[in-house]
Image 1 (cartoon, rainbow, N blue to C red):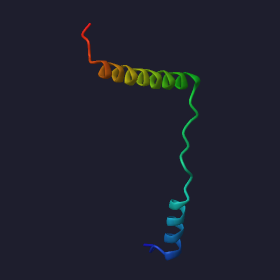
Image 2: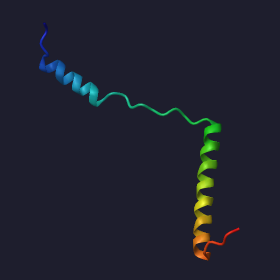
Image 3: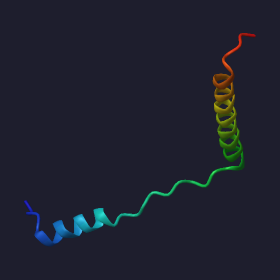
Image 4: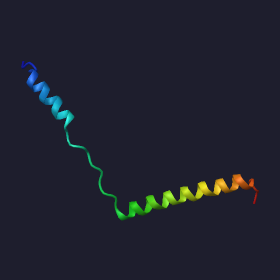
Length: 60
């Protein structure tokens, strides 16, 4: 059996520390549009809830 040499252990640790960073794939136009739509909907919802809380909630 081969023993783990300090040099190879150090090399393995160095490779682990400097391994390439996983990059995210660029977003497609569809994904950008969906994300934009979702963010806008959440913003509008927050504004509506704040407006309703300020005025007092009136049932429809």
